[in-house]
Image (cartoon, rainbow, N blue to C red; front, side):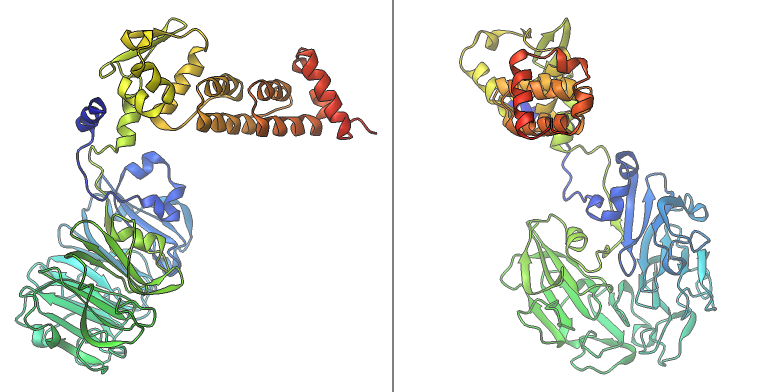
Length: 548
């Protein structure tokens, strides 16, 4: 075992909480090579049917339904194949957000802001209400400003600059733009009033509300407040920013907003929730709205991350030790108290339990040179560099590691621990099985996979039977079933009988009966053992196979 750990330590640098984007169904359309190129990604849309992702060479791709031209491809066509947005080629994306239209905001490392998609309320900030079919630079009132973060509500938009200024525009029926009126805002406008002399460090949007956290940990809210999502102790809408006095004395370092609820995390790891609670999304143990922040998860260890997004009524949090909790609307259920999951990151909660299953943030994927334990093991199969044992079959060598074989196979555990002759050898000769069969068996011990044609799988089935490897035996049977043809059916039936594989025998027998005329004309049928042929004819006769 120490040998294996040493082997792994050479190839598996520690990376915490790797996210598997294939948990979002849309990514299952992509192959391993395409997936490995993704560095940032976001699944969005009213049904989580749109995707935008950025590759390692800073190319931006999109695919999906394309509602309201939200893919930015220049047309309204949906696409199941990723399309590159050439206009954004080479620009390093640092922030992205989406609305309900949907509309998209994207900020680059150079501080530029781009927008496209639904624009019925001027949420693209270009002074019009014309649909944005492709990314357009948002420059009005932002000249010489460097945008570092963006946030979208249902139909309004916000941007944060490197100097801590907050700009907002778009739909303003509830004051969510923070301009002091309810008139829609066609271009970016600085949110001032009590934010005038503050340095904002974070912004988020609910459906029709806005929140900002400033550098001293204070939180300000404005817009719709019918459910108490601004945390002001009342449910009146606010047309300009108001400080959440209930958080006085606390230093908030992260805020998130759901559809109509909000969460705040302090620098001491304390978690507060307020707003709508129809689905238990506040985690208070009931479904009563809260007009002011209330502390939750008080009995849990320190919280290090919180998650929510305006498209859902789902909440999630991660603790210092890596435990992930979820609550609120989870696959249609109302979970009123934080529920401990087996996930390793909050993103997985939204992939598996949110409705729709969007991403709550622009997801970053740390690929680097990371290899999982399974990938490292696969890589080292048949590697002369690290092997301490080799098998010789038909004059060819297969390089392996004793420790791996002992861990994975009872046959080898006995061989290397029971003073067999083989235990002292550096080369073990194999004569009972062919090279392709034995190599496939050893590779299975490293990968859990078998890739063989059905005819070779018969030999592997023999090996699996001899070595009492029941799972391998089932895999061989599965391969044989998938590869059965009229030409090989009777040979496979013969093998199933010989290796006592009852399910496979029944499958092959039925196939032969269903294609009786063709099977009986094959060489395999007439060259088979006489007893098997006799048994087959008798059994087929009892099934009525020879009746006209």
